[in-house]
Image (tube, rainbow, N blue to C red; front, side, top):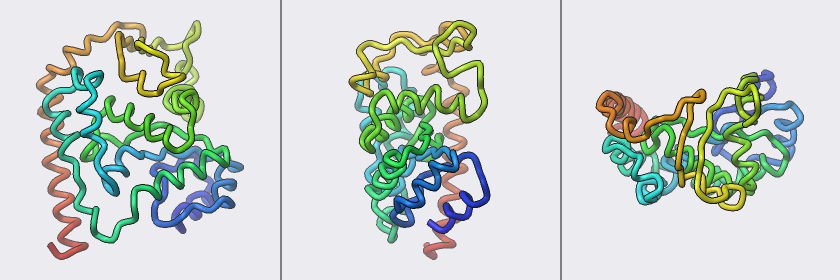
Length: 233
């Protein structure tokens, strides 16, 4: 927690990863809120590192599975971390600390830290929204954390809202995500800058699959080196 206090004192704008090395006290949470600092919890990655990986739940959801390529499905279900069981804190601490931030009125931004092991771009964000809901955020707040809030924090004035003059990055879903956040997974159409996207073409993208496999190989080497240095095995 000392690291968080240090960066808050330094006047940074955004903290990535909710701290898990201790309980975040109310005074610190209020200090973060008063300073206008946003926090990106990255629970989807932390869940994988400290708890039971949530990737299997993503792959098991037919609303998302149809848009996952083989490489994505593999990394979502094989992301178990070697850190678990090595004296690491419980995952529940991450959610508890996010809840304290939410209660203090801190601006929360939805982010996953993909493509870390156990996460992928796109699908893991839906998991992140679900986890934010478990931390006390309403569906509307979770949606804001993935749209308007990051646009405001990163000064992207042309996006974040569905309004005339805005960049048309849009998603059409079945259901009402304002009552059930997992309705964001029931995707019917996606537009990027006003252009309709072909989700099937993305799934069949061989180059994307090759890049993910190469990334996983590099990460495996880094994890092995860290494990050897930290644990001697």
